[in-house]
Amino acid sequence: EATKSGVNGFIIPDLPLEEAQPYKKIIKEHDLALIDFVAPTDSAERIRELVSDADKFIYLVAYAGITGAGKSESLEHVIENIRAVTKTPIYVGFGVDENTAQEKAKGVDGVIVGSAFVKVLLDDSLSNRKKIEKISQLAKEIKEKINS
Image 1 (cartoon, rainbow, N blue to C red):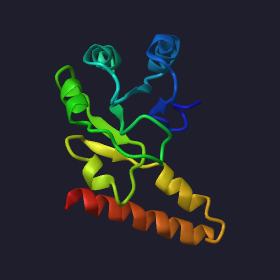
Image 2: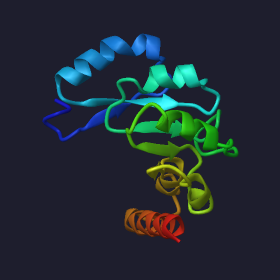
Image 3: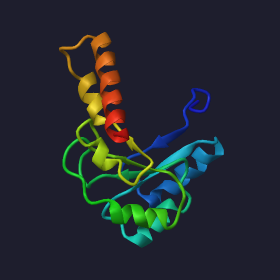
Image 4: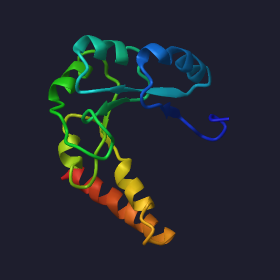
């Protein structure tokens, strides 16, 4: 069903590598991807394990905690450890918005924005049309910050 619907892959938070294999097998059988998370607290050895069969891209968590809150860890050493073992693109997420995108995009191939968009969607004071306009503007601002 997912393939027929145009889905390319899955991001399953809190799914440990050790428990992911049965899901990866099924997902890959349908030519889909299961995106792995790498945290700033992961050792070089753990990173090698996580990215050894990475598909599409690697989701680098900007910090340990809840998405949309908190501050980034220094990701430079983590990015170096990932790049040492794979050419798979790295995208950073957690807390990415128009104020943090430029800093978080350093050294990676892109950013993942979630909570910043969800906040707009949950704003009951906005009409659906205004929500779309605001998300579009926010995406544009984030792109401009990254490219500046």
